[in-house]
Structures are given as structure tokens and as C-alpha cells.
Length: 110
Length: 114
Image 1 (spheres, rainbow over the protein chains, first blue to last red):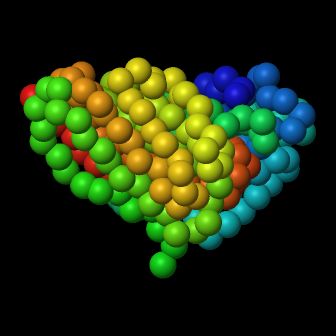
Image 2 (cartoon, rainbow over the protein chains, first blue to last red):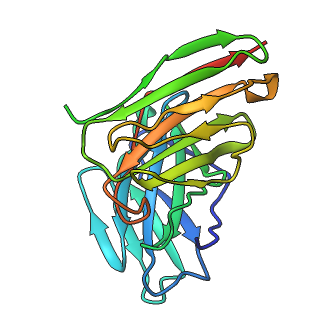
Image 3 (cartoon, chains in turn green, orange):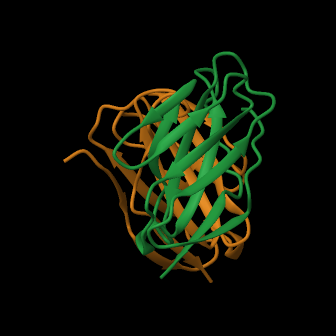
């Protein structure tokens, strides 16, 4: 499981775009980058996953540069309900153990 | 509806009284896992299972047991609970390796051991 580094916390305002960057310098060739969202007292929820370049779904976009040593989760036009902890995980098919780390606590203000 | 269910959702017990928290998934997933979440310590993996009769320790397995006799069920057993096992527990499942396939989490079980 690749070690990841992400900011402990971020603040934003409603309607803004939020970008959370995750560093993973020792990412392996076959590793994927996965982001989860967790609200208080709830289990994490899968947001998005990517391998390279850009992935977009109805919730977020994931930008991955060519060297894959970092990735950026982009949340467009956040609302108060996007206040949550966001986890970046990096690993591949041989990683069955999961380490969520501290994540990034995003607070969206009105 | 595809889901992971856990029971009970809330449990208050006393030290030393054996308990089991059940976990069931209806998605025919091969991978299942248990986590505990504590303030300041985040989400930590207790045990996981890649398939029936295959289980492995996570980061914090001490004081817990699991079994995987059927694909859909993955109970968490506390043979002799202690107060330091007071926590919020989550069960999760995925089609395969959790870093390749999306993990689905249950609603959580809040356990208090007095």
C-alpha cells in the first residue's frame, strides 16, 4: 500500500470549487488511486477512482499527472452537505489490507 | 437493494461477556472486512477476508475473532470484551481487492463496553 500525504483540513464556501491534493511518491505501476468520503458516524463512501489522466463522474473529477506521484480530487460548486472527511488511498490488486489514514477534513461554510 | 447490513446497530455490554456482531452482504462479494473507528485514531482495519474460509489480520486484530463460513456473512466476535474495545465498528465488502473495486460499508455498530 503506497504511503499517501494529504492536508489535514480545508475550509471552503458554498458554491466554490474545492481541490484536495494527495501525494503518493512511491506509487507502483499497477496501483490505482481511490477517494472515499465519510460523514460523521457513517461508513466511508466511494467517490471516484482513476489510474491516469482525468476521470470524471457525477460527483467529482480526479486529475492525475503523467508521473502519477500525486492526484487531485476536484469537487465542483460545493454545498454544506459536502462537509466531510475525504480519504485518498493508493494500491493495487495485491493490496488487501486497507489503511485509510487521517484524511482531509473539508468544512464548507455558508 | 444492494447493501451491507450489520446487527446490532447499538450495543452496551459488560466486560468479559462474549458478543457477536453480524455482517451480511447481498452482492455476492468475495472480499469482506471489519474496521473500527475511534476519535483521533481514524478508521483502522481489524480483519479481512478474501473469500470463504480465508481470513487475515488487519492492523488491530487483538481481542477479535472472525469467521467466513459463507460468502455473504462475516461475523465479528469479541470473546471477552474490554472497555478499550468501545468503538464504532464498520463492516465492508467489495467484489475483489478493495483498492481495485469499490468497497460498500455497512451502517456501523456502536459498541460500549463497561
